[in-house]
Amino acid sequence: MRLKRLHIRYYPPGIFLDYEKGGELRTKSIDLLDLTPETDVNELVSNIRAAEPLITSSCVEQVKILIHKLQDKIGQKDDRMFYSFRVLHAHILPLTNVAFNKSGSRFITGSYDRTCKIWDTASGEELYTLQGHKNVVYAIAFNNPYGDKVATGSFDKTCKLWSAETGKCFYTFRGHMAEIVCLAFNPQSTFVATGSMDTTAKLWDVESGEEACTLAGHFAEVISLAFNTTGDRLVTGSFDHSAILWDVPSGRKVYILAGHRGEISCVQFNWDCSLIATASLDKTCKVWDVDSGQCLATLLGHSDEILDVCFNYSGQLIATASADEEISKVCFNPQGRRILTASVDKTARVWCASTGASLQVLEGHADEIFSCAFNYEGDTIITGSKDNTCRIWH
Image (tube, rainbow, N blue to C red):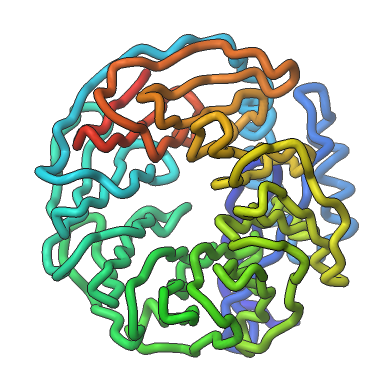
């Protein structure tokens, strides 16, 4: 195997190997779901080397360092309380979304005022205002884990690619025939995927700024999408009650995930790329096998629409957010032991994932909270509200 440029990075619960072969950037993931603070790192690395030829003697020490970092993260205690650290009057019109970069040093906000803003988390200083869209900036994302680019999707039917370091617009991606409502970078940061009310998703080349392909197959709005961990698969969820699994390199349809009786609101992969979760307005969540496209389970229990779904980082737990208790957003902390929810009742809450107990209520917003996120360390929370502010909790 002739390789150029091996790059190793980590993200709970595993490490990634980014390498170039035959002129193409590829990614392998090494599953460390069974890692504990007590795991013998030398023995583990020996086992990894035996199974993975990309891990040569020259990079063993780097792998050991990354695994020790993962052990430290797994061993971190989750008993901290969060306090309102800063209130940012971010936009003149309501916010649409908030998102951290990987380190949590910066975050972005999208708004009905047609802009996206980049903020410094520690100081609360506005670093850049990304202006140029002609309608609501609805979908936003950093190209994590790198964090040097931002993508914005707008009701003006375009997606823009920006430098997170200078605020400069690299490209405007044009081609959708209706509002863009969801987007994501692949893990290698070589593609941006956009989903639109025009029933399609598109892949855009980050390097050239050109459209790579159009993913056509849905019969209604594409409302959610997600790449898998290695970036070779994309799942899209639609108001046509289905999700579609796509092969990214070829742009071909792999499986149609059909079975919901209502619109899909959210789609997610688990970390090892074996499962997909779909949340639906039919009050259920379904879990699908990626290899076969078969539905493995239907999660019942909610009495109203399910609006969000997420896996914890080990892929062993699923959390769902529903309108039956006015919850619109849910996410796990990086350690997977705490759950954060955003609610119409103007509060966010921190919950214990193992007992379901409410540990803390984050109060202070004057209107509905629609977006929330942990930073990578799990020691900072950001919330976005219809009161036009976002709050940093530390």
